[in-house]
Amino acid sequence: LAHFALFFNQGQCCCAGSRTYVHERIYDEIFEKAKATALRRVVGDTFKKGLDQGPQIDSEQFEKILRCIRSGIESNANLECGGERIGTKGFLIFPTN
Image (cartoon, rainbow, N blue to C red; front, top):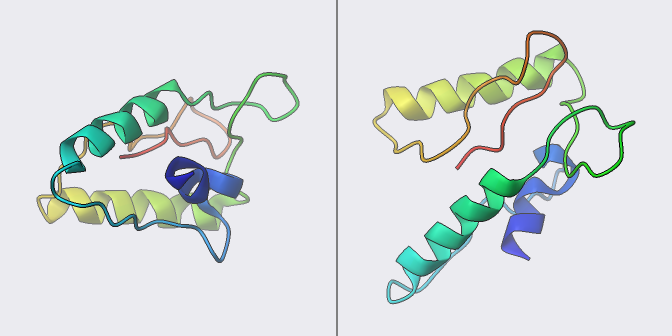
């Protein structure tokens, strides 16, 4: 459910669950499960079957997300997966954890 809350509507929902509070005893287990789930997420053309996530709504949202990712990296945040554009056209971004 935490994964769904975060990635629902490609993160473009005013109530996206981008924070999950986890007890320290199970943090590592939950983190690895979240990472594995993000890595399995299928991103692409929303007109094709079997996809979990389509593009961002427009270039403004696409660039905003990439800026947030770059800001995290520049602040020494750990980027475990994703964080980059998919392909050379459209507004697809790999799920980022």
